[in-house]
Image (cartoon, rainbow, N blue to C red):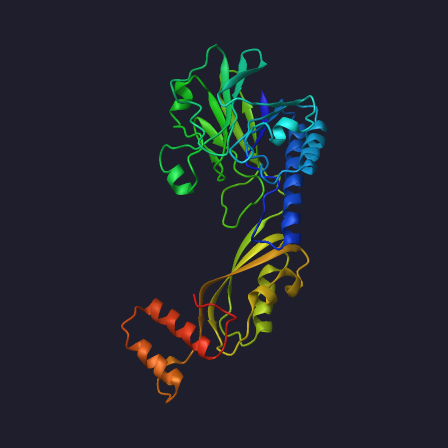
Length: 369
């Protein structure tokens, strides 16, 4: 059998880093991504579509979200199987409970793995989070399958073996060890929660298919999983996102005006689509008046192809002539001399000097790194 597997779509995500209109475009892009995943199921002639949780965000989901999901899932003739996660947990007031689901949708509703026969000799076991936190491991307490054949699992949980949980910084929702999967009689598990894609021996994390934050790595997309008669799973990621999130570093050394900075940033972003995070580094003229929140937006840069531009400071310094300033018989000179004599390390000395000198100049347009 063949499945298209998605996880962690996070419909209705707030995208708090983006302006309101850009955040709304990002949420609409998530919908388009899900529709493309459903289209992929038709392209590869999948037997079913699987969602491994966090399909939407419970606190922000609306009747409009429910209508969209009902229309999108109803447009495919393939079964759609949903395992609620900690962000889209199942409960009496959950969208899962009241949305007008079409007949081809099955929602796993119990906080324990329950079997769903999909074909002769192949069973999918699914479970749901029933609360936003404190869900125990679905494979704990000696769980084992109770019948023969090939067995697959679909749930939302945290792999706690190795360093994955520690490195992700995520809370241990429904934790499990990879070794528990074959011990329970499963040939493979499709799991949501970790946003970084992972193709492990016993389980697959599809990862979020459309960018939710900057700095995400790994191939994003929906997984086409083919299950052979002996339970072997072959996986391939297919890009379904409609936008990209770009991380760009721009050297602004030598820029003497905000217009010069704009020109360098614009050159780095021209031709890109989606959203971009720009990290500025280098040395700026002390007289430059740069206000990133106003000067480096997508609109200010004239980049209509980008929904939003987020700016952060990297190794950015203001090119003060400290030696010359220390010779001044002024308040600035005295301040510089005192800082130089304070025994600070280089990074701290630079931060204090830049902060103080810009304050003495009445400037607040750039923070010291």
